[in-house]
Image (cartoon, rainbow, N blue to C red; front, side, top):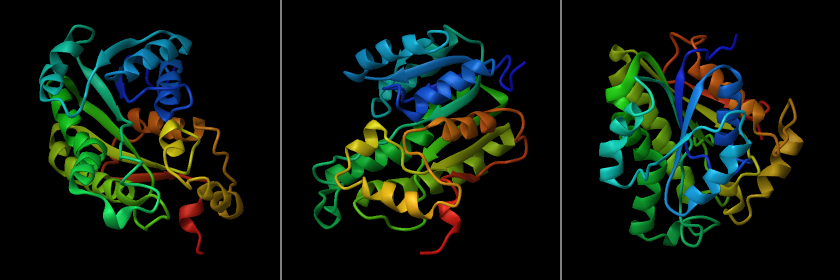
Length: 256
């Protein structure tokens, strides 16, 4: 018996087996869920290869959260494989590493800022609403963030986007709660993902976490973060919404 027995979950953003989303898909399957994954464009070929490493190869859908046609057709695409969706995992973020990250905050053009906000924050709403026709009652939406209550070196407009994501999750929780939909975030510590490698100077985070996290922190291990996501997808948090759960070795609780 697993904590997701009988549930169907869409995990958006599976690219490599080092990604948090891949670990979420793996643990969700191990806990009894039927998993559907999504990606888009050239990344689809990477996803097709990597999902063969999962316990059961899941259905792969192409969903570009900036494409209105993809979003409009998502519910029907899901209906081809499931009657309803019990969980949605948003593991999506993008900011142009050449202009919006690595200390370039003061000179980033609006086009790149707006793209970062659309993909990294607004898409939590657009993707959730695209899935809403098939969301069960109750259902759980879980997004991933890097705590944006403070500024971080080199994180720049991704930090702003994560702050917008965190606010977006609270408003979604407010408006969708009456329909039985819980919306929560998991704030992970720095992990050796494709996204982190795109940020110049991000290795500095490993030094900070290595010296200050009370429980210690392994940036190569996404499993603790994935387990928290799966727990929030389950029925073990039936009255929790609008929350941000930290999985960062406890660093958020320490002073400088």
